[in-house]
Image 1 (cartoon, rainbow, N blue to C red):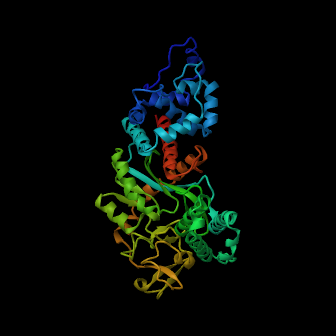
Image 2: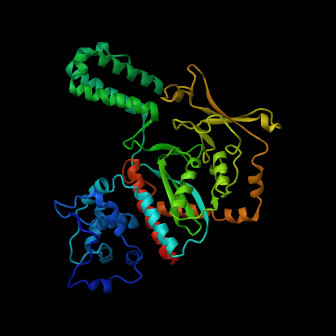
Image 3: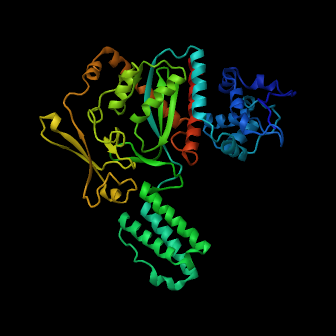
Length: 482
């Protein structure tokens, strides 16, 4: 059974709230600003309404998670603080003497009630609606950028994991047949990943052929584990408990393992849209989604403010079709005309490198052709050939036996004359001054609300974490502007 928003019940101690929780308290102001019953409406179908024990109010459970994000504390600590902090109890609509939940209930609520809920768009849309209704949003510009979040789990060296899994398989086999050592393939003693993969595949095949061994449950379990590791290694080249996280690049020389959150924000610093991806994804391809989501949330967009990552040909065409001005400096590498596999190879503006469809970044670049004849020059990007050899996407991309894998872009001397002329206007220069605001917002998300590192595994949980963090900063911003 489910009760709706739990109200503060009669208690001889309720008057304490008026004495202890001041009118300008953040949590009191949030309670007055927003009616949280929309959470109940959204999650109603996740509960059985006819039988079973009375469930804790979904609104109260959501508020516990919101307190976690506002104050950047753990499940255990937010529940413990709710025992004695009167502002917490007031926010949770509890009587002063009422008991708190068990912290494990928060984990269950996230997994069972919030699963498959588009919480990110729901909460952003709610705050934007409030901001529009309050007359806070007056600008028609959105500032776009992406911020990275580190995975909770560190990536492991693929070759080390392969060796550990093959070792476990061998040891399990020897428990049942010590003489099988004579049939094992020769181990790889080099640090070349391709050779280690070849050894593991041969080990897998030899044991599979021996049905008397491969049919033993303990051996089969370790064999399947090695198979899975081989497949993961061929696809990702890094392994982790966090299977959705990927390696992205902040520059040509620095990388991170985790996720990216692509954001759109008004000049008033209200976030209007967000898309969470794995870390290797480029910024530019997410722009159409950010525009559409911002518009659906009630923003009349006439200007986009960003950096060179958003000035790809397709983005410029799309902006023109929508009659939206692009306040982003053209990047000669991605704003050129048609190029081969434009939809597959993505440009990483932080590293100034292209990333292949498998998520691997070029290791170096060079300019080729005659210097003073722009149309004959190309920028050529070189990829790690060892990764290409064992890549599951190599068909049609890497030619077997090739010693190099490159991707070239023509460099043109005259790029999008209209955009170049627009960059010289006063309107462009004035709007470009607002771009710093989104970097400050990224810093707030990370340094104040724990968005620098994922609190659990998987992209769905990352989206949930992003939803709570963005909801929090938007509410705080609305209260400040009011």
